Length: 302
Ligand code: NAD
View 1 (cartoon, rainbow, N blue to C red):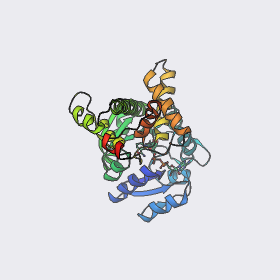
View 2: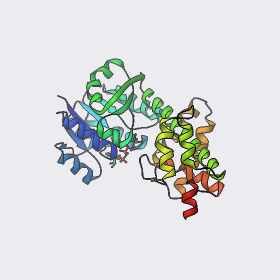
View 3: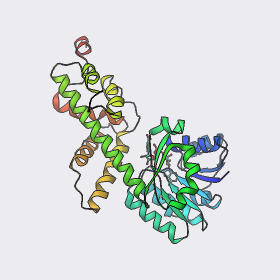
View 4: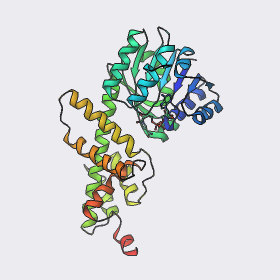
């Protein structure tokens, strides 16, 4: 059993740290929000005093933070994990951040003899709770093999996709496909509704064909039911697409579809919808068409 540090105990980190405890590992936990730390201490974790303290007391440190600036602060900042980490320990960042930041943090760790992997996840809170996350990892094969048993406690699919940064490039590829797919589903359902069709009938007619997808199956019913409870928040998806565009720019790659959807997400955040599920992208398209996606019977009843 390992002595694992866990920094960042929000929606995802809470469930992931809990699964490590359930598997019998020792966890030293820390979050800047005391109530979130109390909750995980309640599951049996030891209380960390700072990111430095967590790293000083453990040989593997996991971070699960919102974005790159928070990872830089928690790892490289004052009282950060790197100040406490000893040579030979492993830092595993499971946040979804820019691959450029992952490489910067990885290089700073390497300079101190600390191994670094970027290992973002896909699946959201339900899969974090069930320990069925998809985990995409960047870093050295030997380090990957050392932490693989720990990653398998939190996820059902764990894949090494390349060197440090590759985990986040893979995650960004995932986020591009999901965002553009949701936007396309929104446009299709708005068109069908405007034409007087029942969007539910249209969804059922097309889901078995080439347009069928996990995104269509998950998000079309939410749109039709007007259920925008997150799931995955618009503000986090906007952050992911911003990171995709920054990474693409650094490689001189144009991503016109990603750029358009990122701007739609930005507009929705400005409208106060940042905490809705990303299926609420449809509301932007609805506003331009002057129509709401719903079945004709429901529309007539209103
Ligand atoms: P969250 O905001 O719920 O949790 C992040 C936690 O980090 C918060 O509790 C915050 O207090 C803590 N934190 C921030 N700065 C800190 C610091 N310097 N030191 C210690 N703690 C600090 O976010 P989340 O939903 O758990 O997501 C975490 C990451 O996982 C994000 O990168 C997100 O994009 C990614 N992700 C989320 C989902 C999802 O559905 N929520 C799915 C896949 C991936």
